[in-house]
Image (cartoon, rainbow, N blue to C red; front, side):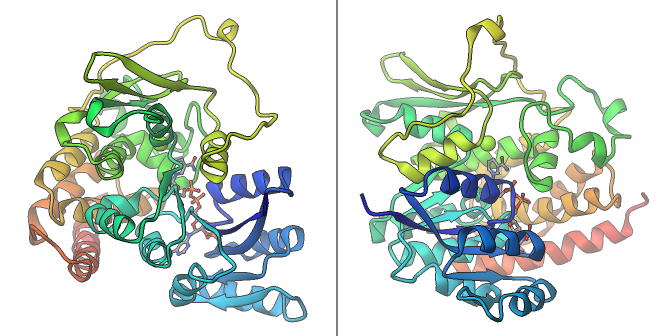
Length: 388
Ligand code: NDP
Ligand code: MG
């Protein structure tokens, strides 16, 4: 089998570094052809030394200067910026694009790769939250498979192998509940980022860790599932499952339920996306029933964790509402990480943005780009007025 040549976007992140571990473990299957980073020049340089990619793209100027200087005598080409990112993913030497950039920043490179008919391993859920209808339509027109990396969606994707989409009654996304499961507003009002970043089961980037603590992550994943699997809003449910062993379930029209299980380890869905449709043997730790005497389930508390309700409302509202939700969320999460907003205030600001940024029922890509900008400006202004 020829080596699959990968463009790993967001190579320096949690998803990207794990993808590179898989490349290193299977040198006969994969080659890291292109890597991208934003600010972490040092880690990117280590990755270049190990993987010798054909090219790297750096999207933050200072980091770019550092990488360019360090690689001036190397065979690895160095490019700067979003346009370069959109270009390298279209190269003939790329067989597969792993979209591991965090946030809205990952949208355009993913779209560009789809238009160049590159199969996508999609970790960057925000792409589908912002522009799911457009992205899936482009993928359909270009005959491009979008293979989910997000563990819940990978689980659903695996459960759907050999099934007809018309046989789906509903999908049930599992959620760990995050570090604040069971907590009430009087506790949450005072929590800081150091608490929120301590996820009980997964080690992930900062943004998704905060999103997991607020349950926004599950809201974003409902919208992601809607577009990936062509579901109606009513076909998507969430259940809290604190052990994160069942990664999600599909219920079929005959009442049968299929689930995918495993230890909470992102390497598994990342590897599955990279090797699909094959499964490749590995040494990852295995689940054992001896270590888990109980798997438990409960309903999410959407009154306390309002972000999940806000995301569901934005999904029902449709149009550019999920794009507003996402942009406002990115701004407040960054502010929370910088100790500029309280945990509960984040939901208030997102709600305000959805109410105040003008609604477009059938937005074009350009209108979504505008919506993203407008929402960021609006939310920054409201943040500045806050008493925190
Ligand atoms: P990280 O924050 O760990 O990594 C993000 C990556 O994106 C880094 O390589 C970072 O570069 C790069 N990046 C950041 N900002 C920009 C920008 N403006 N332009 C271009 N590149 C940028 O995130 P994760 O790996 O945790 O998450 C990545 C995506 O995968 C997210 O959408 C997340 O929701 C999704 N996901 C992650 C999971 C996980 O376990 N981590 C699980 C399921 C989904 P640098 O570090 O060099 O600044
Ligand atoms: Mg997930």
